[in-house]
Every structure is written in structure tokens, then in C-alpha cells.
Image (cartoon, rainbow, N blue to C red; front, side):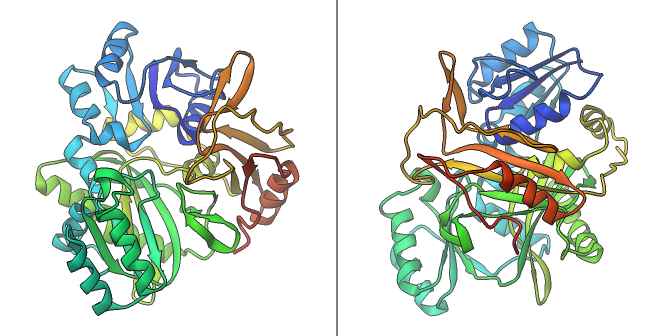
Length: 412
């Protein structure tokens, strides 16, 4: 088969690395890709948002299957356009992707279909938002309604911090149009985990759970980011937790979308938290998580391409997982998730035994590999235990000028 991956980040590099192991692929393309993918795939200089150019390329190169990584093209309707042209694509339609594209839509959807989540209200007016915050007290969570690259969430510990976050989003437009509407919801206390699943219509095939770290700095300090590290599986998440989440979250969601007339095909991601009342949804994503994908896919024993094909054909892919632990730590540009420089020569890291380096924000300037984003690399390892995986990763990492990473991934 000829396969096209759409995207340029660490998640897409991880997908490429897994697909490159398949003997069922003749040509593997990625658009636009990054500096780390060139050894495993052919990078094509088409932006992931240039949907018409991607369609033209898919036709010209006789692409048998396209897999979409990032959320922006999903919410721009890439699946709808590919399907209209008779091209096979593993991705949700624009209306199905709204489950991630609009937090207010997702909350109303969960309320309608009895999916456990936090109590919430939606606001477009800052005075009404401020009054609600003062009524409910802190801690409280403020979320930009639209896509904000994983950074549009503030867990406010005080009323002052919460009002400031609401004002930044609604008035100062910190997240541009993504924050023209906000969701304010109760703070949920508990242990978080991510549960991704391959989905086609009403069929759900869950992966193993992962745990990611959103805060920029050690001990969960600093602002929210797209994710600074992750590990899988998660020892404190039981089979009962997973079964509950599959039945009461993922299955209810896809059944609800079917009822709405928007059947889901692709990856459905539940960002979940185990509360005293059981698992509840923090958020939905409608694609592979980043950096969760980088620690989950290395543990998948199946041929990933065959999984995609089986799911699309309505067959159970019978997912099998290695009985090891996988952990990854993100190396980010100094200043991320706020202002940071690009074009900095990336750290030289020597891979150890059973470790891997996944590229995210990298590109070539001449023959030099340089930074091209906030999250630059992920160093990962797969070992018999989580502690061994953690030790293997941190043996590779070392402090670097212009870059930083968390030192406490996997210590919880």
C-alpha cells in the first residue's frame, strides 16, 4: 500500500516509526513531516492545512490510505473532502471532530448522553463569568472553547487567578477566536489518565492507558503545555476503571455521534480523571494524543497498518500489547509554551540501549538540524518496569542551553 501521514509533530513521527516496521507498505509519505522523519518516510512539503494540495497529491501518488495526526485539519474538514473525492482516510468528519473542536459542544453532548464529567457553564461575557466564578469559588477550571494546541486550560487556585484567566481569554483574546467563548467547570480532584481507542462507527477498540504531564515544570509547576512527558501503562488504573471508561465514556460517545448522524471514524481520546465517584471526562480529543502516542505505540505488538485496515473494514483488530513499560520525556525550547526562539541547533543526544528519540519541532537548515517549535524532541524507553524505563531515559538526557525538560516524569 501507499500511505500518507498528515502532520509534522512527535505524534506523527511515532506513527511513522510504527508504520515503517510494516511489510505491507510500498511507499510511506508524510506531509509536511519534520527533520527526524526522513530516514523512515518521504517528507512532502505540503502544509497540513492545505487540504486541496493534499488531495491532489493523494490522487497523483495513488495513496491507498491517509492518516491524519493533528486536530486543526480535522476541524477544517479534511476527512469530508477526502471522502468526497473517493479517497480512503482514517479520520473523523468535521462534525464528529467538533467533540474536540468546541468544549462547549462537548460538554452539552456529554450532558445529553449521560457521560460523566464536571459541572460547568459556558460564557461569552466576562462580567457574567466573573460573577459565576465568585459564586462557585476556587479552585476552578477555565477553558477556551476552541482549539488552543493543548494550552487553553487554566486550573485556577484562587478567584483572582480565575477572573484573570477569564478576562485574558474573553477580553485580551489570549487564544484569539478560540477564547471568544469559555467553559468554566468545577475542579475535579483525582488521578488523571488518557485512554485512546481505534473507532469505526459504533465499534470501539481501546488501547492501553497512559498518563501525561501538562504542566511545564517539575512538581506540576508553571503553565499548561501540550504535554511534557508521558508513560504507559498506568499501574494505578485498574481493569475496572478501564472497563467503566470504555462502556460509559467512549462507547456512549460513539453511540451518541451515531444518533446525531455523525458516525465517528478515527482515534477517540478520553482525557479522564478517577474521582471519588469514579472516572469522569476532563476532555475529548478526536485524534492520537501527544505525547501519549509516543509511549503507547511502542508497546503495540500488532502491525499498525493492519490495525487501521481492519478497523476501517469493520473487523476486530485484536490488539495485543507488550508486557513492558514505556516512558518518554519531552525536550522543549526555552520559554515554551510562551515565547521561544526557533532555528537553534538541537541537542546532541546519544541513544542508549532500548531508547528512542522522537522528533517534534525540528527541521533542517542546510545540513544542520534545528528547532522549529516549542516541543522539540521526546526521549523514550521501553523496559520491563517503569522505573527501568525512567532510568534509561534520564541517562540519555542532560541539561542543554536554550532547551529544558522536566526531571520528574514517572515519579508519581
